[in-house]
Image (cartoon, rainbow, N blue to C red; front, side):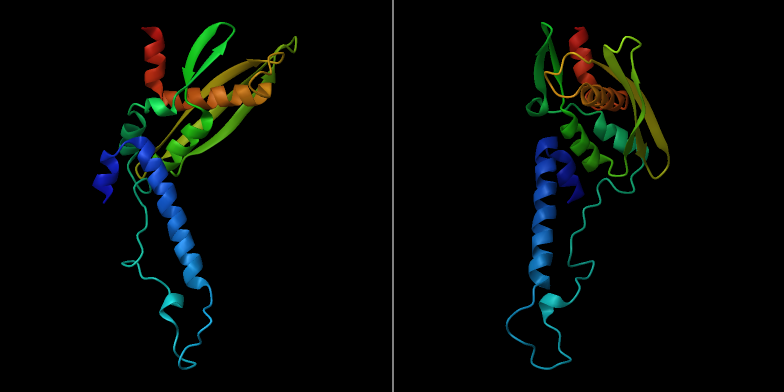
Length: 190
């Protein structure tokens, strides 16, 4: 099954994993709900209340316990155009992947990833804020991190709070340094 999952497009993998996790959780909840019929004897347990064995329950493990090279290979694939957004700011058109899509892609391909804000610095005149963000990926054989910065004007609140904008920008750039969405930067250069 894992080979089938790897050959499908990224977007369908995201939705399929979410759907299968939700359906599994609903099945577990339904199985644990007490039924109105009582067992035939006190020692008999209904089949729905018995714990599932490993063979009976499918556990998604595609991102868990993988070498770092495999994780990076998956992240370096081109992101589908359906996940890319266009924004016009100060007359400049930019294409980007929203941070929540990047977060979800990391959760699928590198569930052991972590992210942290390293610093938040306001300019001396208070007109802009810069955020440094670190993304760390953990593989079975190694771990790797990349840091990047993002800067937003304090006056321009068109797309939200300036610190949030700077953080999202830094997060996207740190992920691009790991290969995720890097193709967008190459398109801008051409």
